[in-house]
Length: 540
Image (cartoon, rainbow, N blue to C red; front, side, top):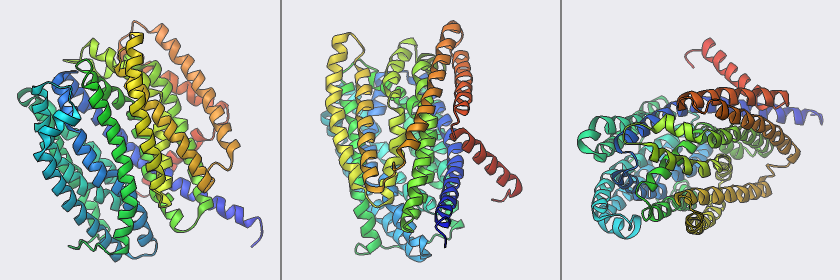
């Protein structure tokens, strides 16, 4: 083989895997758009019914322990551990061993989560009073404990659903797992809308449990497609089971740190003005809309490819696919950051201000959104960076850095609450700013450590050049949005947002094309290939 053939082969392999990630990401992204749209419908219904009330604060606080339990025993931790190990079995065509492994992991999760959930349900009143929301009133304490007990049912169901999702993603099937969150959000919206008037926030909780069941059921048909089989086994000494446990333990600890960050917010916000926790929740939700659509969909699609490349020792291809994917994520999230900051007030009004969600609620939410939006790109990059670590079977490094970030977030939260009060600013904004700074530091440290391990930034000029072009596009976008805000200041909020998104996004695309950015061209080509494939092969 000639010296010139090797780079060409690597380039061809990289292009194949990059296209595969991009096409899978488009499928996931399409359903993430649907899921996020239904998620917003859910929040609009909840906001209309409950505004930023003390009752809604109790509903949000009730999620904290169930979500923490889910993070510790299933969810992202389990998927991050299960997919790389399953990918190794599937790479050597040992499907029988793969399904035995998945069965054993499923059985362990059901036993462990069922037992712990029962203990948490018994101790719910004490947990709420002493740990979760000590600043709540006695009535809020009682309501939070009641809601938490019901939510624990959904946590157990999600444990099973998370394993099914990991199996399907390992098989490069993304359609039904991407649809599942949309069904979940729809169920909560229906519960709040239909049962909220008579049951209050308990109606939304009925939707949470029903949505969790639907989240699982919608994925089950795909298991038959891959002839997945179940074995009633635990096999604690099985090498695959032990490897999943080894990878899962630190990852679970890392996700627990994230949930503890949320818990810190609940504890601190419970002592602020009523509705502060709800305003933080809505602000974070709006920030996570583009993060979920862009970064999570790309990361979910990229993770099995990362794992497969590692299993085949194709590290050069992994480096190139990572860099290309990271550039694409930043290309889409940086202008979204500009849009969220400059359109935050009309955006909140257009999306949420109706019914019990009044102008005061909009102002409080927009204030939180301002500081959350500053961290959008860091949140997005972190989704991809952590999955690169998981692909090489390293879950400890992200956990160690994540715990440090959690501690920094807690300390900064206390500092900024005091500082914001001294400045006469609403203190809940300090909680959002603390989260942004801690997340940005976490992302920077992990990217540096990943480069030291895999040399993913070996072509630094490529990334800095791309960031320069993206920055130029963001500057033009900012100027465009400032013009829209000045000219259409008296226009309805929905019109101001719509014009800002269309004109700002259009100017961003044209500017980056003029600056010779590769990302918009790659995106258009990927969409075209996907459409052409669907037209020529509808059964695919």
